[in-house]
Every structure is written in structure tokens, then in C-alpha cells.
Image 1 (tube, rainbow, N blue to C red):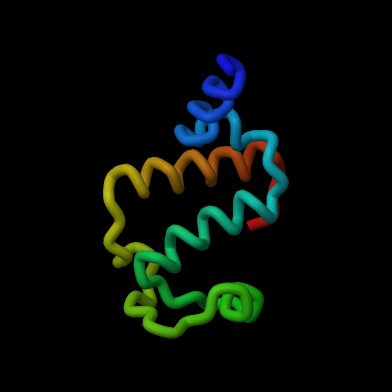
Image 2 (cartoon, helix red, strand yellow):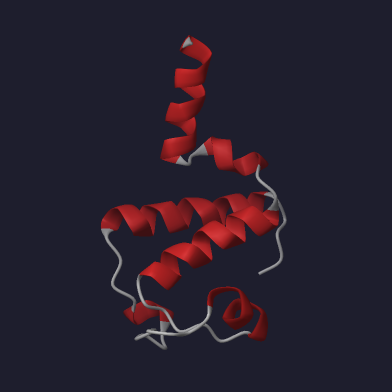
Amino acid sequence: MRLAFACLASCITLSPALAGFPCDELRAERNSTYKDAGYCFKTAQAIREYGNADCRYDDIADVPLSAAARKKIAEIVADERRNGCAR
């Protein structure tokens, strides 16, 4: 039971635990955060996967994100770089 709690805690904080995730999962987590905040995707692949219905922000810098969401995205981007994921 103690091991399960430790894993749960590391998965929730997203820190080094995400480093082992495949690039597709990291990208999906990052894009889902932007989708939920109203970002309008530009690439055909992202539009296919997430759609642009109800999007409100064409510029990613304009997307209103909480400090926690910005931190989460920064951690994901760092993990993507560490894993050599294409951007």
C-alpha cells in the first residue's frame, strides 16, 4: 500500500515521473491543457485530435492559464526536451 501511495503522489505532481512517458503522451497532456483553456490549434494534426470548436485564443501567449497550469506545462516541455521529443 505504501508503494501505491508513493506512485500516486509522484504522478500527481508531474515532476520526474513524466520523464519516462512517451512523447505522444507528454504532447497530449500539454495540448489538453491548452485545449481546456480555449487555445485555437494551428497544425492539421492538433486540429484533428483536439478540434477548434469553442476556441478563443489564436496566440498561445494570450491563453489565460493559472500559475499551476503554467508550471505543469513548463515541466512537460522540459520532459519533452529531455526525452528528445519533436516539437
